[in-house]
Figure (cartoon, rainbow, N blue to C red):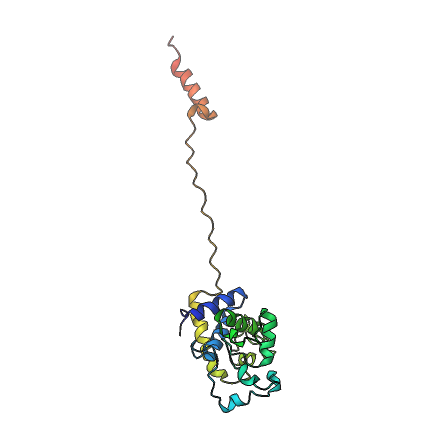
Length: 215
């Protein structure tokens, strides 16, 4: 696990663009790492398994038409699932994900769904700011942003590791402001004696004293 993977770099860049805090970005990365099997799979591996068969007809997912279960399987960094989510993100992105659901697998599209969706709480109604702020990092509770409490502790562990990596990279740490160096000023040469009133007077007196002719 590191931040060198192209998917990680893409996600970090999007998090910065959306103004996410470092710990929020860490949780987003942890979510993507888990949902894609360490950035390997941008589409759900279809069996179908017993759980996948239950996608069919699930009203909470918006799957009301026969075949919706498989058509709107999990895709992208957050594995959005169901007609409801695909409809929502079609409107948000200006794309027809209902006609071409595979578009959600493209990294440049998937990253917007992942980051913006987590920030706004479009998946479950829960958003990043509900659990992760400047003063707290409830990485376990934050699983409710995506999928209840499923694998919450596991993903929290991923998020903590990413948080450490982001801290080392300097995410969210302002660069120190250094005071500008003063401009170089040429030294001012000492005044010539004749230009200084004191020395001018002194020299005048000495000249008068030593310039007098002896009587």
